[in-house]
Length: 168
Image: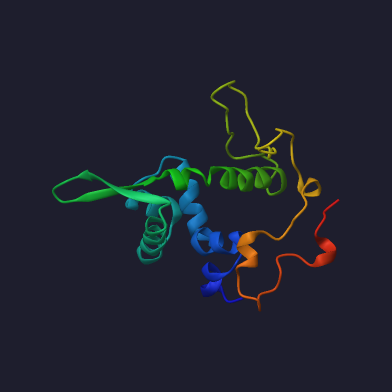
């Protein structure tokens, strides 16, 4: 599998990585969720070159993750805002942040806290089953081939080896 062909794979993760799977894009998304909207602010905060930043923002706009909204007419200036599709990436971003808070911090601890507005408490993300509401971990999921795979090219490898289909 070649990096530039990820979007053609019969795998939802590969197709997602084709859009958001590089470090600069993930940091742009992090900043979007922190309220950054303007090109110059992304550039200043990330220390990224204008060319790379413009490329990442363009890709996120093309895939409907961000939208450009004018905030000034003369000269025209636009800012970048998360779309509904972009907002749906929040669980993935906050899960990565939470993992980093547990495994990548130094003696000072987590650099920021996520406070649930509903109860006012510091929170960490928890994955739950959409059907029963029970917490779900890696050992609680069985993987099966779906229709989207069956329609894929026959020469592609199956998503999981047969002996790994059930995780316990």
